[in-house]
Image (cartoon, rainbow, N blue to C red; front, side, top):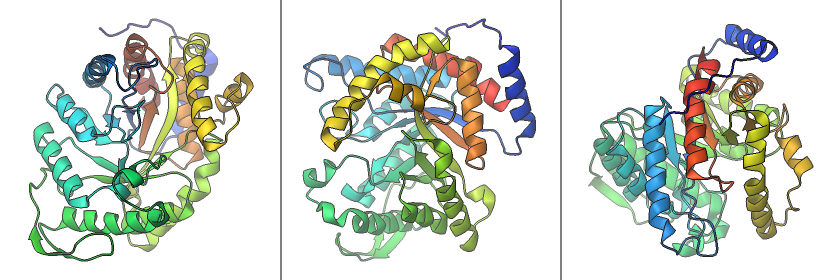
Length: 369
């Protein structure tokens, strides 16, 4: 059931939103959600009977997002105990059978540790099952467990990705492929099936903060999905300018060089309620990840700074979240898509469903007018 919200937008926030909407020169921004299919909380995470229920609830949220009018839903790829997304196309295919219009994508496909032939075949099948609603975001991944799992050397981190991206794009653009490289057996006049409905099939490049990755996406004319999970969003503008300039030099038009933004966020009925719901799980998750990577423990002051006007987090009520999306878009020179990553804070299924309702009913109309 959709959550009906009757709060009126206060005059100061409404004025800022209307001003930003009147100033916008870009097309309608797509709004969506990315999920890492977090498993049930507790000591049995990833192994207990709650795994099936967690996936069932995730599919319900994708269906709810479709009904609420959201544009896209992405499933990540991890090979860790706390996530259930090691086979994202399976989850997306299950969602395709129960949805009508929402686009279904990876977020991201760890292409460095995958076979581009199989990746293309799986997403082509997803495109057929969904009636032409599939996409993929390919990247190298922020975790590294896929490399030893599939027998790859982490020292080849970038070379693997560059070669496999080259092959993936050749497969996408040619039914019959002749290709050779260092990390995979060559192909000679090899036809690859099935072919997707969409031509060309949408492939986005997912990036973090490496300048070379932004330039590569621009030179190839691929839409760019930027993951910004910390710091100040506006600091990524020089990198996005590199992407756009590389694309211009390669002969691509501005409308071909789409920029998407993936950020951590959560929408509650109001700011206080949203922060109180989101912060405890966020602090636990990122303190735990920090122990692996040498980061200091998360503090409330750190969270508040990240959730401030220029920080990367978008946690709050519908009006302030919508205003922040528009502010980020302006800071980055315009974005085409924004995706919330919400299931990293141990929020209940019910709270996530309510947040989806708020995004569809309140945030999207404020962002797009």
